[in-house]
Image (cartoon, rainbow, N blue to C red; front, side, top):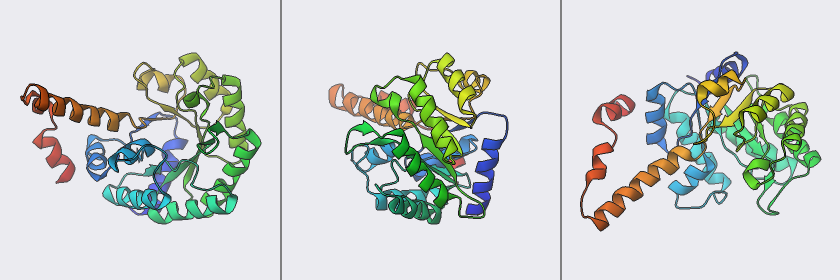
Length: 268
């Protein structure tokens, strides 16, 4: 599929009245394995990718992200959404430049966040909406535009204010966002309220104690992602095996590894 085809398909997934799951691989192998499972779209994970480079989240450069998006876009035929943090810019010109690079790298969609690590705070909503509008203008220049997801980061940073989160997402929608996302939101009643009030396709982060895919679909959620959870689980399994080797000197961890059949299905 061409990049244009993948963008059209990604937009169609958001337009239909059905939830879809968009897991987050962190390298080519995980992307191919997830694609072989039958998912309809994939997304990068800023945390998972950073860990794969031996870095903390929010410490990956724009050049590293763009190269990563280009590699994962070429790895499968599935639409790829890019976790592009703040779009690596503090001004609108820089945001537009990042969006152009994501477009060239083959992304079918991308996100922009309202949290600023430099100030360790969430942007004022008016500032954040202006940034979303700049990203929208750049993303929608193409005949088949990328899907832009605007993120409200309140819940990830201890601001459990549903009214403010909804107001932010409404403002981002008015700025032209195609979809919205409030990672960390887990209460079914709050999710249902947000979906009803915002009136745009809503992404929800799958959480260990959160609602199931079916439950989120029934609440009107359109898209579910996994963030860094799959990468964290994989690295967790690695550490369990490493500690078993160092401690007991045994290798029972290997019994639960990925099977040859799955590897063959994913890698050919």
